[in-house]
Image 1: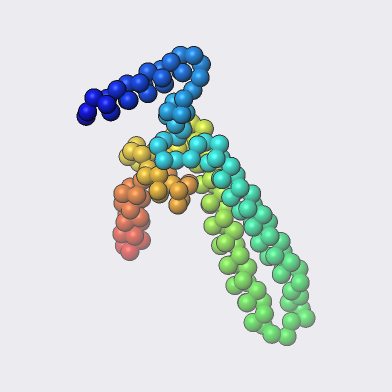
Image 2 (image 1 turned 135 degrees about the vertical axis):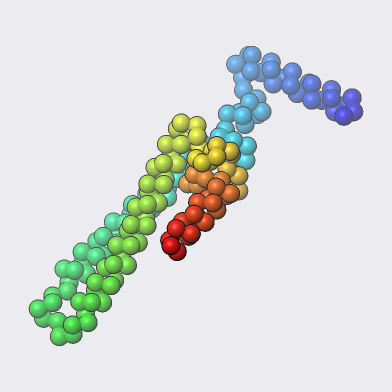
Length: 162
């Protein structure tokens, strides 16, 4: 490292120390308080997850209302086609599966919010290593790093084929 770069770095570190000692937080100290490098700050993450949570809750309520409306609107005593009830059951099963999927995502969001609060967000639940920021950007509720998730999925596929 040349002396010019070293002097610039020393000056910057000195300023950061002085700002922190004076009760001021520099850009550097603010970034160290974020969840981890490359991740959004906790407030932005909470807002994103809360927005998704609200959308899921509305979607679940719509699906439940749709299932109720279909059930109420169908009168098996006046139906001339026995297949109508079977079709309605099949559609109801699909709606229930969608609701279950959305409920599971809501549980994942709640768990991710809890990890944000405890400082464990972005840390793999299995190996304790940091989860890559790109993975969390795509899947904000991820609780495992990619290698651990792959291992889990391989384990599931090998036990389901037995």
